[in-house]
Amino acid sequence: MSLASLTQFIHQAPDFEAVWQFPELQRLTNLRLPDAVTSVNEQVLRADASSMWLRWYLAGLSSPQRWTLDKSASEAAIYVEAISRAGSLFPNESANDKEAFAKIVARVLMQEVHRRRGTARTAPTRLIKQNLIAAATPPRCWMCGYAFRSDAISNFLGANKPPVSLVLPKIVDLFRPRGLIERDLQIEVDHIIPVAGGGGAGSNFALACGWCNSHKGARLSIYDTGVDPKPAAQGFVFSGTTLHELPRMFWTIRLLTVRQKCEHVGGCTATTQNHEMFVALRDLRGSPNPSNLGVYCAAHDPHVSERFVDESRARRIWGN
Image (cartoon, rainbow, N blue to C red; front, side):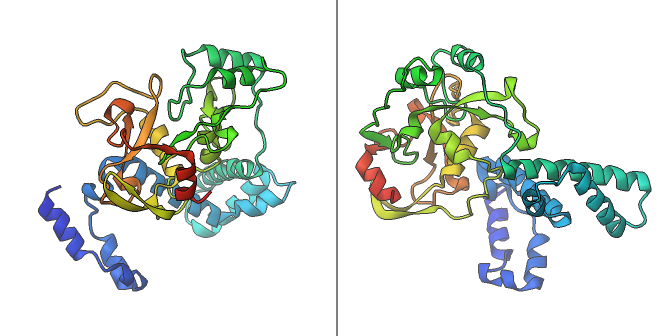
């Protein structure tokens, strides 16, 4: 995609205010979105958008929230509703095709119901915890590559009775302020593939730091936390530029888990399996949204000299 093509697309695209006018929406959908708009994070941006549209479509067929509140709901009950919808939406299709459609809709919606209920989770045994710790030296968070502290490992394995309090750091990462509360430093077991997505136990278990696990939650899409960066509680100077926005915490988690390796343009072998990774703004003049965020190891982190700040400053900037 040439610069001229990108310029032409921006020129042809309607003003943001024109999205309330249907003819302008139709015109926009006929324009090919240049690859430069989605940047290097194209795959996650496009994939998560498609996933979100599919979730909306399925929920429009049969509300998962209604089934979540109905404790007697089952996949069979959702199937009955889905087969009825298939009959009205696709009256000319064969009975076999309608049945296949209703079955898959019922299965996927029931997974969403389980996710919203927070049910069907398998707790890891002590042996599983020991195996997860022993699988890597040192053991790390599967999402960001953070190497766990020895006191957190002892607490996790139950060696400390009662568990010792984890000392919070005085210096934290400004863009990922892990360490403002004790849970951030704790070791937790995460389901790599969510339970709602069919994920079970065993090889689906992975170690996660409390910060990553808490901000990952049950979210599935980079759009689940909004489309605008988080406004900073107060402006701050960073590398000579005054910033007023912060990346959404889930954006950081999503990009780290999808990339899992350093994106240095010169090439780098560092991954979350052997290094901690950091999310950085590609250009400080731009907004810290997913199009302007990259994943780097410490050696190639463009913010390495200023990223770590006093925890009190991080609290003031984040507003908590």
